[in-house]
Length: 132
Image (cartoon, rainbow, N blue to C red; front, side, top):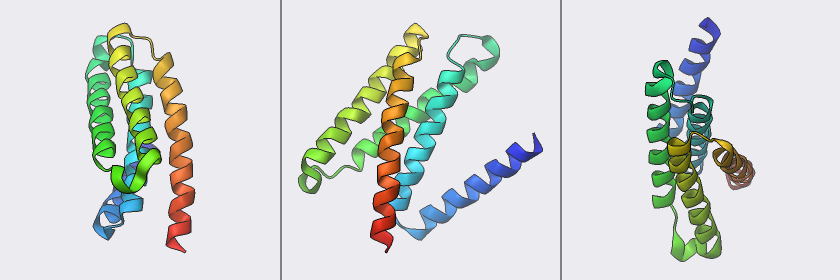
């Protein structure tokens, strides 16, 4: 338990540093990390057990908020087809989250997590190239 608290504090400090640095690439990377984390927690708590209901809905809401922020950050004029494809992926993830909250079946959310992980890794690689 102590290690978890230390890792959480470190993660929060790292995220705060990124936001303060005013680096849009790093900020998007943090948003992806937060989205993936929240979606995983949502899936882990998908069953309607009273003791996990609040945790489930908190991460459901957080996931939807991050998806919205990612959608709003897209530049369709300069991003063209890539921005359109990302928008479709974000919409797919949003739809599957909503569906899973109703059906308690996380399978499609897990599929969208995998797709988002792939995009996150590509973004991380691109960010490293931009930094050089």
